[in-house]
Image 1: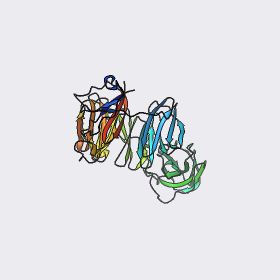
Image 2 (image 1 turned 120 degrees about the vertical axis):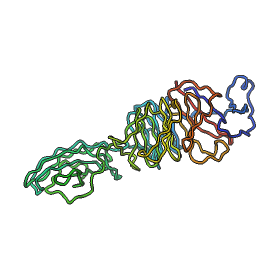
Image 3 (image 1 turned 90 degrees about the horizontal axis):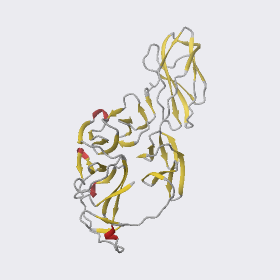
Image 4 (image 1 turned 90 degrees about the vertical axis):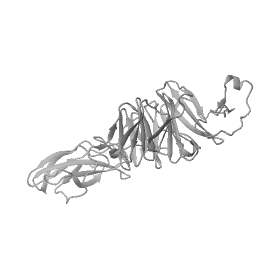
Length: 390
């Protein structure tokens, strides 16, 4: 990647005196930072911490992760901790509460410190059902099963099937244990005779191979995870108003409210006109960018989003960064502000769908398909550093 640094372009004064330079630095343009007023200061040095082929560095609230030689690693004061192998060449991350979601376009996982798990549980195949002796009223019944993790998270349901029960019969299930080591139980759901919705009939340990129901319990809790599954893989992750969002190609998937590992695989997505490259949430909506355009989805929930076009050009994948509002303009801006790179330079999005081109006409950025950004403050002066990949 070739770094392109935009310094002090946020409308904040730079009152720092220039540091001492080595002879020739100013003439050669080496190791200096020049702000939009023309003031120059010495660039700070760097110390190599980790050698080797690394990518996808990310840090938040004391957690730092990156990929080294195909391994997702955690970096802390205690040193480097390899966590698991990953297949993708670029990872994206999103913190939700005290956990970090990640995806490499092939799989999606969750990190808590250096402890990983898959983001969600794959549903079971529909179990085989036969008949046994019992007192289930003769008729037609629907059934399905789910897996339950040791922390209470329930998977999506298996495809619902129908079984015909004759007189003096019960149901004999042949269950399939989940291969996920965190799964502790299997829930079996059966409808009332002729019913259209299965209700909880039994909960058994994960390794249970067979279950016989000689009678169906009185109506229990209805199955609520029909057509649902774990988090899809993607290359952009985001969080907004109690939901996790995953961008997969032109589709922007969203989780169930406050259930970040459970996604409606039938209708839980928004379609975009191009490949999604940006997800930037503010107080009253979300800026969503693709390789074709940037839009603002105003509202608090996907069911009520109002679409407003912000730009007729796209955003560069991976370059979005959140900036405290008080660093912009006169310092009175409230709430989150996002900046990202585009074909017209650095752009900014704020609440209400306000969109601004910050560097158009002053900086010409090279064409890029992806990148990364870092917002830093040096001596009270904000800097946005963006590395672009063509």
